[in-house]
Image (cartoon, rainbow, N blue to C red; front, side):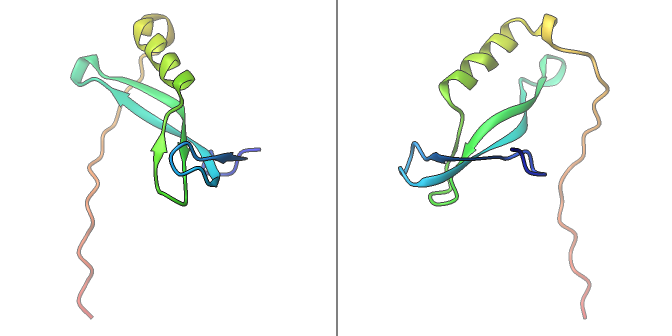
Length: 93
């Protein structure tokens, strides 16, 4: 089962601290820069609420390398908008 953030509701044991409760989230990662940039969506990342560590499993890393190696057969050209994150100063009361 997946929640609205893309997290798998399957309980896992954290590989870092060993405590139960680590969850799988799906994120978007960008590899490379400029015209060589490759965006990979739906990458599974394990996150532990106890120790705060996030990590990729070996099988995920192998699949990312395979996607990067054969990017022409996996990738689709899409326009990409880029926004810069910036906090706005709060108005004085």
